[in-house]
Length: 446
Image 1: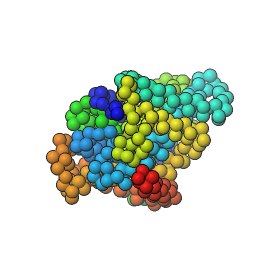
Image 2 (image 1 turned 90 degrees about the vertical axis):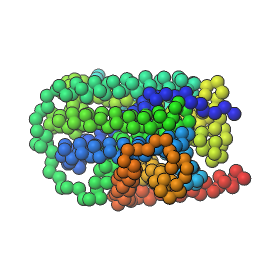
Image 3 (image 1 turned 120 degrees about the vertical axis):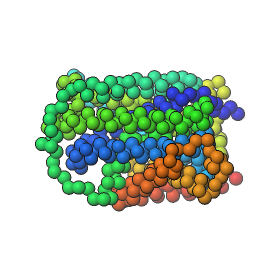
Image 4 (image 1 turned 135 degrees about the horizontal axis):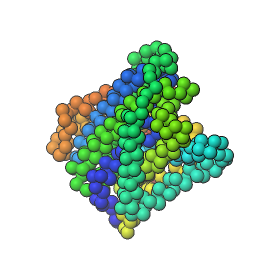
């Protein structure tokens, strides 16, 4: 049976990280922190810097594991190696049911909403489209992108690289141009006084920023296809994360300086784009974000099926999902399964339902990367396995960065349990259902 082969270079791996990370979060997150939580611009920038440090710490930790186990599947492969099949199955179960399919569905719906909103602003009247038609248009996005990623690895690679290169150039151009637009003055006049958040509340504020940083581990899922993985996987994750962190800090520095431009608007990015482009700024921003999000969805469509491929190879999903098309070199059945689930979410749940699903599963989506980084320290200090002990890449100042990631992630998860108790308990319950599914699968297989 054909298998995935090493056809992807460093640039594709790095662009996959950047493409996965840069979405709508960088344009929306500071609005909540500034207008709803009433944090000062300085504190908001510090939160973005802390989020960048956490993402970089995670990327450095995963880089060690990726170099030691250069296999497809990311967390699935690492947890399977360190802790065995149950934790590996659970992270794969969450990836299949929520981790990739739900973000693809949600982001596709957001793209259509942004395009309709941008066109409405340009023509000065609301474009009238029924909810069902919007859902159909959104469903077309993952289907079209799946076709690109099924049609040979090189086709999907080229498409993803072009999208991400254009996204990166555009976002750097916007950030550079905003430096030369004068700010309206102090933001203190429009910022309502707010109390200092409670200690544990800071965890949820960091978590809010971390949603924009999700995707720092994207290259790890391509571990079985990246050429010279010991060298290229660590470089791709670290450099991709650093580039994104730099973009986020520069953009938010510029967005916050335009906070006082329009006192009737609670959208910092719209203020900044309006200062740059005039009345067309809001429409331009909507269409630009929509374009950026296509690259994000494309990256999710590309990397998610590598998890299901790895699970099927280990006998934890139907063997059909481990099939690689001999002439195309792609896991077509795994891509089709993920696309089908995403389309079902779009047509059945719509915008609000899919968003609720992501919120409910936020705790579980944070836990498995935490367990993976913990597994690195466990394998190094307790199991002391030969592969980990002699791994070809070790992060600077080891174990400082894995410890930073674990401490801040623990802080965020405790905060989530305190302030989003119901959602967190639902996530734990669904994960427990995954454990039951694992034992049923084991019995079914035998």
